[in-house]
Image (cartoon, rainbow, N blue to C red; front, top):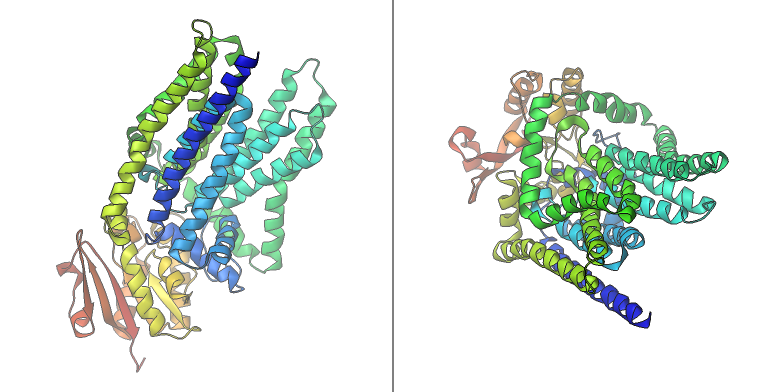
Length: 546
């Protein structure tokens, strides 16, 4: 007994050491990537968070279809770490570490030390991978943090004959917070609720009263964050705009994609993720299949299988399958890889004495190989400047140029001035700390073949004409518009006429794959995009007589 205990303690310590090594490696990478310029999703959240700190409610001066939880989360990060690029990415690092801790705690109760270390290591490595845009602070990272916190609390509560209300409410609140970070968090809340029902129904005789109390308490906790959001939006006088963006428009957006195109996008998004961490995904597959071959495995199987199913469903709404959506699948994949390590130990125990050693060395090998991807990213970060790294990930998107453009705008405007960004580059308003002349900070919705497109274009036109911003920034990158053959053209025709009549170009960032040419004043006035690079950011100044 004593010898077995010592063996188990050594396995736990060595497993923790492997997890710690993975954590340290990823932290170093994240610190190295902290100064990389914001991309447009981060720019949206940062702008909204900044406006909240300035006393401006969401959906009043800048709008999008996401629920406001992510905006308030960003406002907290901006408060704690500062309104800088590095501050935002340090906040992401903390969020990612918290997610790893909760996944480890969850896996520890299910799988033991080696399986938990596998799950934690696999998650923190994959969630920093370029294939899921893991070094950028997308809303999915925040969904995962609250979802894992809620699921762990839920599992802890189910250990009691009658789960404590504080555990159930805490679990429900966390799952509800996952939902208000992004609507796809609802799938984790549904999973939590169904898991409570499944666990209760598995016991014989079925304790119907216990089921009602437990599921009801959890459900109350889940809905509280959204109810509070509804109340807050109503109190701040933006409920109608909030409802339009997060319900009416969001419903239309989610129904745009056809199945064939969606499947193609899934392949484009998912294959690189597997290619970058093949061993982890093989282990995940082995865990999800091998768990059924033993009695103890079959008893454990429903949790990881259901968790994986609902995590996958969280990636699917709209069938867009953008890279960062898959972050929501990573905890379940990592847990499944941990299940493989656990199942290996159970199977090996029947045939060999040193099953713990086999378990440990399997864990060591998988994590070591997976870390090669982290080190590869580290070498790229070390060899490139932050701007160059952004270009290597996002191509000709004007994210590095947005910083200098914003500096120019900030130096040449007063704090109370508004600026217009004609394009989907909200990070410019955040950097410049200037309010937008229009609530439409993305052009995507205005270009989509959806019933509100023309109305939204008319709103933007009216808002810009009313505010008469001293500076207007035009983004010409196709990725800033995603114009389609059937897009409404009203805004495009208006923009050409309005800019020609009331503005003159003063700065042009002409973006090529390997360099950016900067044209000022006279050179900017004579520039034509047709003779330029892949994309441009053009700053226009309002004519004095206008």
